Image (cartoon, rainbow, N blue to C red; front, side, top):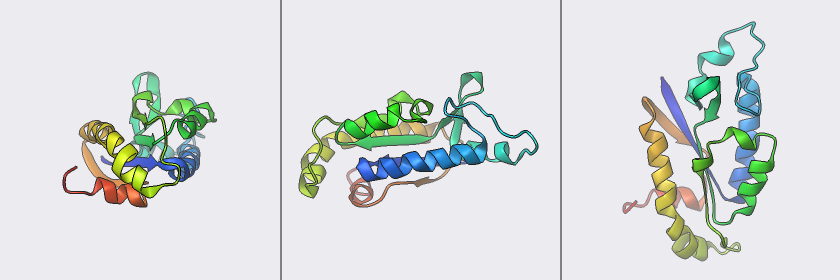
Amino acid sequence: MREILHVQGGQCGNQIGSKFWEVICDEHGVDPTGRYQGDGSSDLQLERINVYYNEASGGRYVPRAVLMDLEPGTMDSIRSGPYGQIFRPDNFVFGQSGAGNNWAKGHYTEGAELIDAVLDVVRKEAENCDCLQGSAGVSGSFRRFMALDDH
């Protein structure tokens, strides 16, 4: 099976990512608790569910996603949202202060302190894949930051 690892970061990325997971859950018949509640008339919903989800104990489906931000507010909003309990708790990586819309602060100080923790979670998720096909979701300055040679 080919898997995709979804990485979402920052306030905008996490808000868009949350909506993305609501749509993907609906398409695959997964409810907000991670249980399959599909229509049962077709195997199409389950046929490729492992592209985006890991199957956990009890038949729960957990998104193969890493959620990150420099401050906890966005993470708190996601956790308290309708699909907040579907994510693996260890895959929320966040700082405490934020960058205050200052790119340099996010890149050189606050973000630099968080990058090792983010890459560790990404590595763990990637190692659990049989055949990692690709990553999705990261955009903007964080994608550039992840692509640096020293990381």
